[in-house]
Image (cartoon, rainbow, N blue to C red):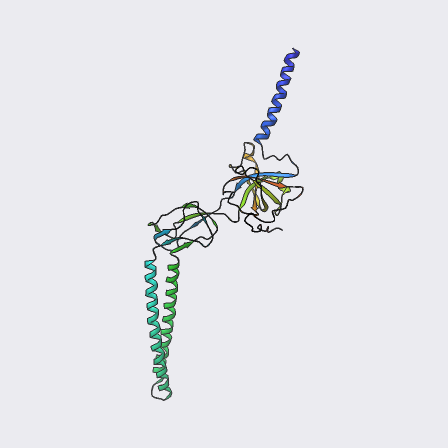
Length: 300
């Protein structure tokens, strides 16, 4: 009988040990260290869809999916012939209006001299003034039309509005482009931040401006520095991409941890782990690997 009790006691102790280990594996978000806070999330994915301002047939697409782009880079062009013809017609019309104004101005000067010499009536002088003013108005109208059509000609080209990576090339050369039809989807790469979540019970330990370190499974042993730049004012349920069985009903607050030195190693959407020192705040690197200075926190 005592042997059975010992066996039962040993089984209970072993079960308790297994339960403790299992609990730590299932609930990794519970922070056991008092001097730091460990949070989980992803590198935030922010998309920009770009489209032509006018309607036309696409002539060239200069970037493929996965290509990095810089703000202001030419990305696509549409057939400009129709818009170029409109600009040429506007320029010709403007030249005609200028000639008409010159003739009206000369007529006005002649009538004005004859009116002063009492050879012409005041009515003819008024008619000459009206003709000159009408010619000037026609020039302003022609200049406005030329500016509009030049703008449409410029709009046959699409430029990258932000730095980023081409995530999706939606249309191809030969397709018809419309202002409502995006051509590219660009995933923004700057500023680069990690979107992580903190439980309500830990919210009082963090504030904007605190430094943080980011790690990922793709580059074990490598640390990236950043700072908390945003804390959501409203709570939400834990997103499913970072939740465990325990966390499905937990209310959390979203944080943005901005990277001091944006890097191509941390891909958009990549799962990451953020560690926030609570006792002593660490120092960011003096310079980034590319020689540039770290981005400055807006909170000091």
